[in-house]
Length: 310
Image (cartoon, rainbow, N blue to C red; front, top):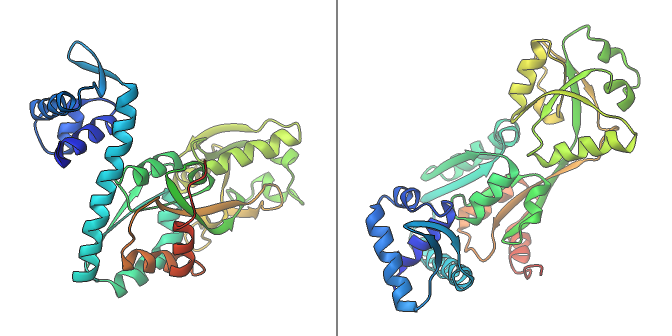
């Protein structure tokens, strides 16, 4: 048994049981991956994957246990490497952040600018996705830090810390009737076509819940993954936009007008997440505190030491 074999079986699971995709992700050959998996299964005396001919179709009962242990081993190996790097070179390395478009576009820039000024030799990588994709990237080690809304808290493999709360606004072209609704109500909003976020975003469920609580059905005509797309289609006249308040910038959104809608919906919380059991390098702590000043190193360490919920 060796670390390469453990990496191979974890990659196969991560790639939906596709050996070819796993091989591509590891920059190796498909026959090589298959051979190493067979050797590992022979050594252990059990099948890790169920097969139909040459195709993998599932994970066996012992395979699930083996994969869980393999992930822990690989995580521990990564932690050992991180410790060595931290004490030999504290100011160089890389930091991978998975987040939504709205966070990347509207809340991260200030923290990123300060971080790059403090750590110019750290390479930053930003990956965008919906909250479910972000959680998966962090859990699978494809990203170091995840930033998104409530969906992150549902993943037991993550340590999740609250950053700040936010709410929504309605945007429309100048002169649109919705801008004259005083006060703006859900009943009034339900009369107009609405452009808002895709349901993959946790905040979208709060929107639906608010309308349902009033016995209303919103006329959602278009959904999108990011705020800029929503605003683009509102400018084209497809409907009124319902989006995060932070995503409206008067100086840039000159073709739109905004009405605050915080009184209509429950607030959402943005969270920051790291993989449970990970060793955090010093500049990880620095970035987290730059993004959410109340999340000091002591606060993060306390959260890291909290046992995983059952």
